[in-house]
Length: 74
Image (cartoon, rainbow, N blue to C red; front, side):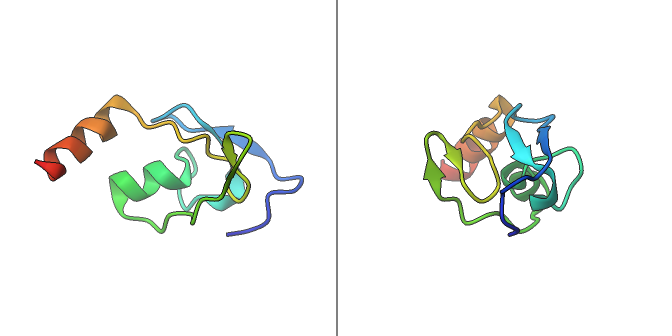
C-alpha cells in the first residue's frame, strides 16, 4: 500500500467510509470492501485515531457484508 500523506480521499459506495483513492484496486470501493466483495488484496490495517493510517478506512462494514460474513461463520 502507498503512503497516506497528501493522498486524495474518496468515499466508499458500499460502507461509506473515507479511504485514500490510490490504496484501492477499485475506483468506488475502499480496500476492505473490494476485498470482501471481489477478492482484491486488502490493506494490512493499522488504526490510529479511528482510521487506518495506510488506507484511511474507518472500520465501517456495510449491512450486506455483515450478513455475508455471518453466513460464512454459521
